[in-house]
Amino acid sequence: MTVVEPAPHPHPHPRPHTAALPSPAARTGAVAGSPVREILAVTARPEVINFAGGLPAPELFDREGIAAAFRDVLAETPAQALQYSTTEGEPSLRAGLAGRMSARGLATDADDLLVTTGSQQGLSLLATALLDPGDTVLVEDPCYLAALQAFGLAGARVVAVPGDADGVDPRALEELVARERPKLFYTVPTFQNPTGRTLPAERRAAVAEVAARCGVWIVEDDPYGELRYDGERVPWIASYPGAEDRTVLLGSFSKVMAPGLRLGWLRAPAALRRACAVAKQAADLHTPTVNQLAAARCLTGLDAHVTRVRDVYRERRDAMLAGLAEALPDGSTWNRPQGGMFLWARLPGSYDTTALLPKVVQHNVAYVPGAPFYAGEPDRSTLRLCFVTQTPQEIAEGLRRLGEGLRG
Image 1: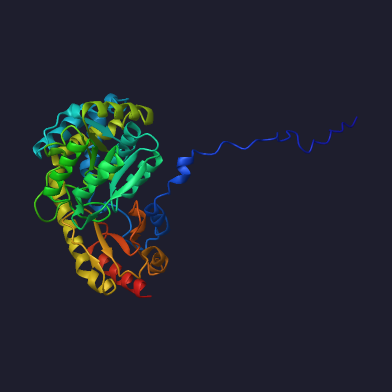
Image 2: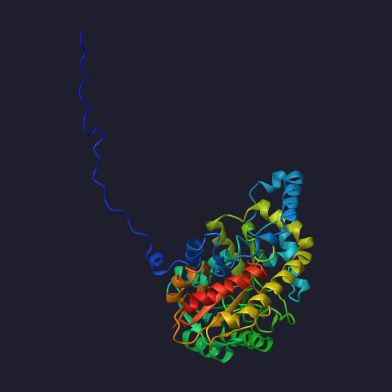
């Protein structure tokens, strides 16, 4: 007997009618992605000399020291290292950080600190803890790009404070605080990203006085402060009279240890620190325990490591400064940063560095146009160059290519 199998139904499981899904939050569409990240994706080819990134030199990472710290932590305290931790951070790391800050003139206890997953998370936590949609935030002009993103995602209204080659103008700051009633003023006063400029001591004191008189939070971001090549250290704004109870100080290991560890910290008055801890619990519970314990062990040798890094970066900064006059068009200006990772240049007014970038990249070199760093009207003739990632020889070749690209 022959059994005839029934023909299969052409659609055994007909697709049901599907409705459109809800769209993402409006604020995510209102905040642009990072052009720096987009440029890095486009210029990932090995032949490109990339002055666009803010990347530490990987050959200078203390690979052996960090590897040894992880080995020791996992061998000696594996249960602790692989377990959940407190939101505030591992006590040994917070104690070590507090000691370093106190030695630099800002009396700090371990309990004053909250460990974050990079200092960028500190910005996000502060935005969550301080800002309601529609609140006003004051920033430098130009400003660190990812701070603009964090405040924009919080729904804040961002207003730029005028300044000059030395940084923000305290009188303009006071006028804007009185007029705009902002929740906070965000600043990178030491070797600023993107300009590399450093706010002088007298202006720091004036900013602290404005915060005290007018009632505004200061968010002082200091990821580059240990990378000083010339001159004398300028104290944190947080250490000036009037700023003690209204300054949040952010720090990071990304530029002096390794960015892949994703370790930063936040020093803030108790009530705001607790609010940030609640926001962090909702975000990630805590920063990875094993990374914190390993970093705590690396603190003992960190100063010696930073000294080695500074010596190399100083040479690279000088190499870039030596070649800029030949690379940039006549009439260009640029600064001489005393530290950090970035140099800021302004081409003659007829140049638009955003429009020029695709032509320059054809010469296998890249920079970051200045326009995205502005909260207000941008100066389209500006650009940012990172000088720490390449050797002096690569910097010289990159500047030769940059000159060809700008002339072409």
